[in-house]
Length: 179
Image (cartoon, rainbow, N blue to C red; front, top):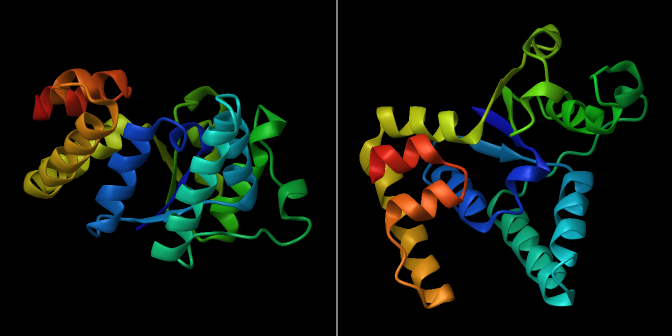
């Protein structure tokens, strides 16, 4: 299964690490475009040059792990597509060009299911998506979550617990399941 990750999922570190960890475990193939990476890097740059540098390093790590993950859209594709917010059409174009099955985003309003269905795509929020994978493969998702928790504890020097960490990352259903 191939899934486009909207930029709003790449910036929060815990959410990104959960999604990419589950992808690395074989649950799905993540897709993105250069523009999505640019949006992530622009947002990260708001926290200073270190934020942008970290986003660039993480993007390079993604490209190394999934060399076919970065989708370049053919000319004219975006122009033929429609979404309520024209600024999001590039996400739909990446999904179409990448032959994705769906789009993961927090912006449900901007990606109406009926419009996506015309292109053979579905949309899901990351919490429901990860929760569904957890239902099918609880040990795999639990292992990824444990690694993310250990990393969060190490990097923040804070004694995070699983449930608060995942809830803060906007993954409340998964937090409850793993909590």
